[in-house]
Length: 309
Ligand code: NDP
Image 1 (cartoon, helix red, strand yellow):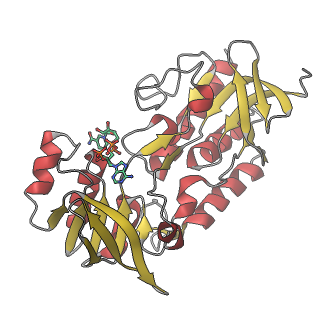
Image 2 (image 1 turned 180 degrees about the horizontal axis):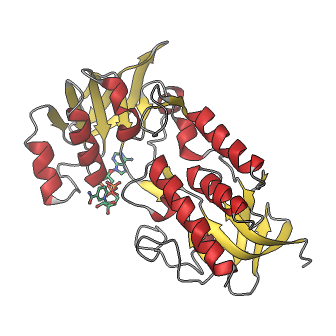
Image 3 (image 1 turned 180 degrees about the vertical axis):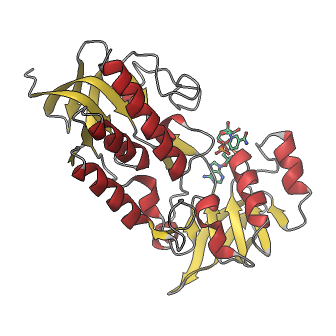
């Protein structure tokens, strides 16, 4: 195996965490190289307008925000490349990394910023209306449904939290729950059950998301007793879990039971010295671009300290 390149600071992942890490690492003269992976721009590119990222009083197009972050990193000297890391060996120094299955490189420090992906039901209509009424982030997109009727799929803490959040904005919120119980904690269950704007549709699965040229208009549900019925909604929110993109590192890096990388409290250090994690791959709770960006900053500062030791 021939090592083709030695990199001081390698960043894996092209979302807000990765790009911010690249901005800080460039300014710290760490000569960062960033591989963007399969989804340049990250999860934010699946939404449209971002109204809660500070600094943009009129909101900002999500793709433009990510393109600008990328551009800022490039202008400061980051080497941003297309390509996905396909294997790592954190048992050797320098660390050994394979890109796209063929390119062998080594790195002194690695920042993992591979993000997480929201789980979807897998319906063709869900793909068709993604960004046109279908969303996996109530905090990001709920604002667009003020005084409207929406549905949230799922019965976990996220679904309850998102339903409660949406109930503060919307006229009515349906929760579509596939069993006759919620998985969420007692406190969260009480919160949704006591909210008169939330109606829980028990034992229901979504067969189809309905819509027209303007986007989502409703959902067709199948109840366990065999009844098929439609509900009229303007927005359809998925809250059936996320999957952190940490599988590639599982052999080396400690994760929690859901696969989120464990870091040292507010810092970005993992159990392997010289490997840092930032963004949604290590954040099961907040999952916001601004938090991802902030943790990318922390990872770059931690990497700088490590490399200059
Ligand atoms: P969970 O895995 O806890 O819950 C997923 C929910 O989606 C379950 O109700 C599940 O149903 C349902 N579901 C899964 N697949 C489908 C499907 N194909 N169709 C319909 N429904 C489906 O995920 P969460 O994101 O809610 O939570 C992840 C972790 O984060 C948990 O540990 C949670 O406690 C934690 N969390 C904590 C919060 C807090 O403390 N404030 C806030 C948010 C999350 P079923 O129950 O039938 O499997």
